[in-house]
Amino acid sequence: MDLFTQYITVFGLKPQFTLDELSNAYRTLAMLYHPDISSDADALQKMQLINTAYDYLKQYAVSSNKESEAVSGTAQDSVYTMYKKAFSILQQAFYKYYTDGTGFTGNKNYLENQLKEAKSLFSKIIKEYPYNEWVDDAIDKINSINKWLK
Image (tube, rainbow, N blue to C red):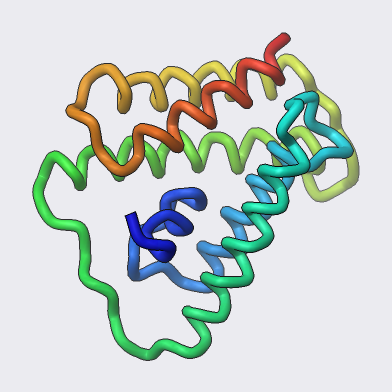
């Protein structure tokens, strides 16, 4: 897997992502893996990878005016759709956990329920589809979610 594909997979993006999508994905991953808030033993290394990937993809998006080839095939599209839904649930869960626009809310029950829902979708990617580019990242997300659910 080339570097570009690896990095867009980390962020759960399609090759034709926008800067807004990249920024939103970055914030979500930062809330999931930041060493100051994550109990994951590898949080620092994961955050370093996320920062490196973000810089690379941001530079790519700014300097590139051409569209990347879209992932083809209905199975791949279904996997991506499920992955994106799970990732969106993570985004909303952490956003609402850390802020609802008025400041820190800290509704742990809400966060746990949303993390379980996202975990369920990531698990489907692993169990119901043949190995694909999203599987490794789904496994990583599940492992991190499990640490939050302890």
